[in-house]
Figure 1 (cartoon, one colour):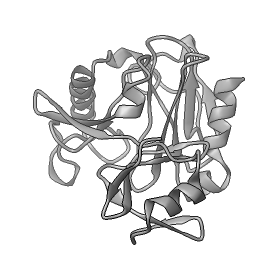
Figure 2 (cartoon, rainbow, N blue to C red):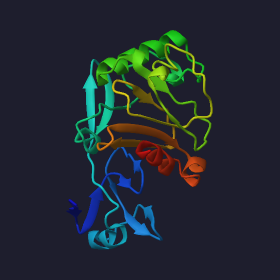
Figure 3 (spheres, rainbow, N blue to C red):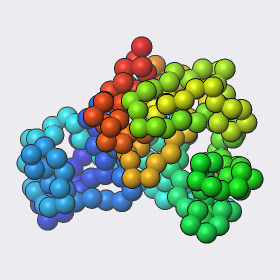
Amino acid sequence: RNWRAKDGCAEFMGRWRGCCAEISGIMEVSVKNKFFTRKFVPAAQIRRLWKGMVIFMKIRRNEQNDVVYLTSSVIENTGIVTHGISTRSGGVSQGFLGAMNLSYTRGDEKERVDENLRRIGAAIGFDVRNLVFTDQTHTANVRIVTEEDRGKGFVRERDYSDVDGLVTNVPGLVLAAFFADCVPLLFVDRVNCAIGIAHSGWRGTVEKIGRRTVELMQA
């Protein structure tokens, strides 16, 4: 449990409470009624309230051929998964979608989204033909992804709907989800060699999509 102090206050990024919330940038926070605020509280107080529940991570900025993406030190250190969180840099989309739009549901041209996916894949290091997309509708539904799902959402049509989370233990599959102001949950299980991703809006959070994802990974 590595605590870094700044004027007696804890600095950290993210937290685990059965799930992981990734945050881009360092937050200096306190605990008030068991929820985070933006005020300062001594690190010792946070330790008492969140003992065993807080994991520190560093978010690293990466750039490859003008494509900028973020990675988490905690996930990298597992050594069993390649991951990335896209930014808006390095794509070919235009206007309010510029530049790295990865969604086919925002009115963008399909060819541009295809090219953006190829660019982010080349930067992070995955084959876009292995992508499997969610079909997000703010549910707590989580799908177990198998070999038969390879490419669904990119090179093949999805034959499922209302899926906000994906888990798999099939090597080479790339799980993809999409986020605006909802929370991205990223999971790695080194024991079962499984990974998961979930889109957690307020409804999914209330319905415990993070917990459901973990339970499926352990099944």
